[in-house]
Image 1 (tube, one colour):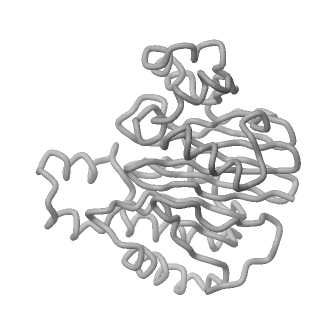
Image 2: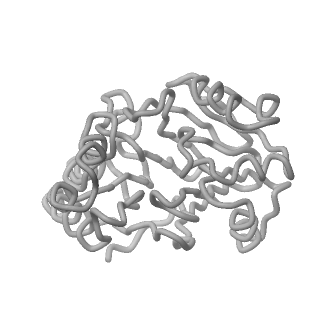
Length: 265
């Protein structure tokens, strides 16, 4: 059985857990080591059970707990080569743990296969992930100003898709952010808007995706209901009958089981 659960999602910290048989992988570690260990414990796991940590990029909201964690529990870290080099300069003791991934190349990790895919973000080497399991495919795509063609094609039809839906464009433009920050978020190396997420979600649904989790929502420039409404309209037009949910910001989300037919809500 393969399960997936977000642990935290948003600019205050990101982390998620994928379990397939005896293979357990974290995706990002942007919250404290203590919270990570609590989440593992709630899943009946300990740090020694992890096969590795996939890092999307080295912004703080994705690696905040990593330095403390690897000091206590040395664990393989899988990431792009560019992200790996940046981690070496930021975190003591990380270099021996790095397992660099080439974009587009599937790498076996225990009972699953992991493929890193490029994203367009203001952080060299930023990555999305495709994880192939015996029960179906997980697509994990956040922190990108737009979806690169090769990445979008590789994740189309993933059974479970975790998709950034960061901001409502009008809320962002009229909101409290300074002009420069607004331009960064809206730029090609920023974050995916609700409208952009809606377009890709509809394509994914038509390609066979059965569950979609909207992730990395802005606290100031979005609401869960706004994201659900925007993406939901596009999915309705695409005759989607699967599930659409939002990853909670500061608490673990529900456990999704790959290979089990979802119930639409």
